[in-house]
Image (tube, one colour):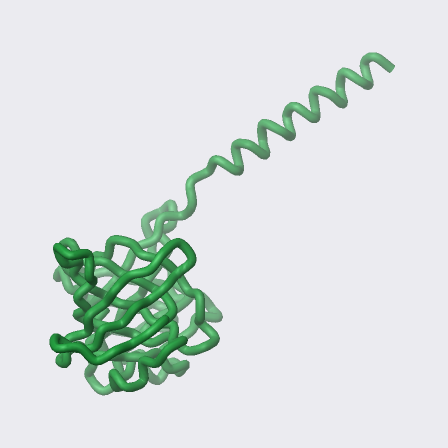
Length: 206
């Protein structure tokens, strides 16, 4: 019985150590890709990135395609869930250089405020619109997310876009795209389950 108890205790320790090791494994690194589709070979996209490098991204079998399409500032209403690409101002206000409106079924996606890589020093805020008021420098919008809120000014010439669920017909050479999170595999290859393609020559502005 003592041997059995000892064996059970040893197995419990091994399981605990294994569980801890699994929990401490770093998440799969992701890569954000902006660029132009150069070629399509099945589920593999050859992309010229905005930095000028050539990359290949394998799309998963069930990958989703969203068209990025132009819309109007008037579509941003109280309660809308939006993403604001912006440059932080000295007074703390976020000055938008692009805004994307999420479809209702994507409400809550990547909620919060974080640094962004669209421009040096830029930020991204994904949040719900609490109020929107016309101002002298553009539309003044207050957005709220679970950990806080931000004041945003949207100048009149700011591109406003939204996502429309689409299909593989959007994926063609010459189309501009953004992949928010391609997974980088251990062998260095890239894989993604969603691609966002600018429709009618649009370059996704975010």
